[in-house]
Image 1 (tube, rainbow, N blue to C red):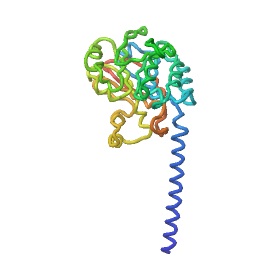
Image 2: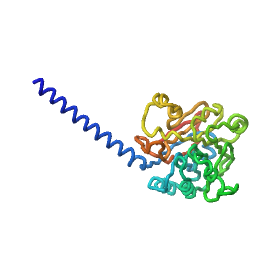
Image 3: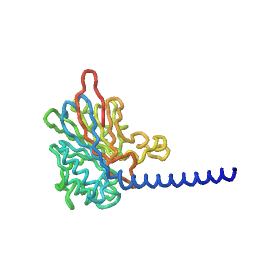
Length: 298
């Protein structure tokens, strides 16, 4: 009886290990070969008095972390989605190329972007990984002239004001860690009480540099939503502060607001599990009554 019991227990343990190994293998194959290419459209509604008044009815798209190595299945899917959406505005928050690789394919992708009102962008750390090529995102080869091969306006610690018919909106870009005086001295502080603002920043930690009394929306990426689901305390233990604090989604502190996208591509490891690549569509609505700010998404 005892021998049969232990034999049965060993057999159950053996098959349990086999089943576990098959499940992990299947999960790995899904995370590498399926989910990274299963691009979804994510709709986010922003209720805000200033932005809602100026941008109500506008189709604005947020893209981040493309990490383009070629114009493949994922890139073609994103371009097809954009064509169907016919966006008024596109906001890009960095990492268009793979680490220290050629940016030719990234520039080809940017050249295919089409909007009614413009494309605004900041650079990410991957875009600076080949310093001699990074300037080609903004300028023509061997020239200081703006790059005319794509419609993207790159913002490096600067603000521009646009008007799409219902009122002015400031569009700003914080470069990398925001060490320049864009944040702390004059460019943001004078916005209060004037036009609403959308700030682009690859690094979501720059959200902490902005004054809580500033009524603005920051768009960021960089985290990829972690690419796999881990608790925030574990991200902190691993040294990924941005993933611990602002992994993905919507955040609010005082009047300032932050949206962090899961992005499109992958870095470090080519895997995504429960973190599907996304094209984010922002819908702006005016707040009603006392309601000044609100979020909803699907």
